[in-house]
Length: 184
Image 1 (cartoon, helix red, strand yellow):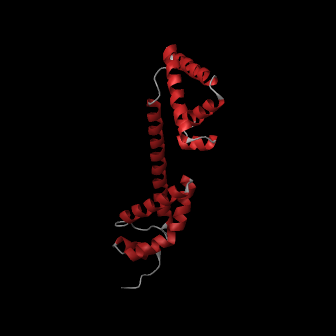
Image 2: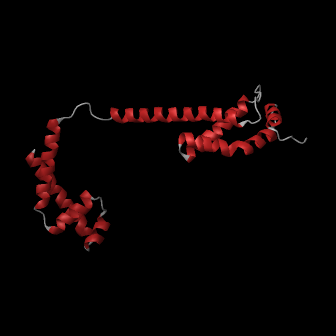
């Protein structure tokens, strides 16, 4: 292996010829400044890391046939970095717009006022039926039906047996179902 001179021009020529050592040397010399340029453009550390990697990948691909005009490779890398950052920002906006469009497609085209009135009336009937329950039954309903507690968790919370919660909740559901069906 031959000794590589550390001037950018010689390193670029060697890297353009396929020398991974020369390219690695350039990478180590410029990765931090390129990262900070990327970070300034995209504002997010993870995105800046991705843009930095994309910059060096693009540079590696473009090196054959590239001729360094000045003393430093940094201005060329900064230009590539700006393009990569702009591409990332455009891609993120496009993805965000597409996602927002999909969310809008899931919304109903019109509001069904009649259905809203029926739903509100049903909720009122259920609340009225729950209001006349015993305090223990209201708590069982609240914990199991409204908050999603399992029977045992509700039993532990209320200080009663598992079977008490299971049996009372079964009766409550039957009573509420009857109330709802009678009103419709």
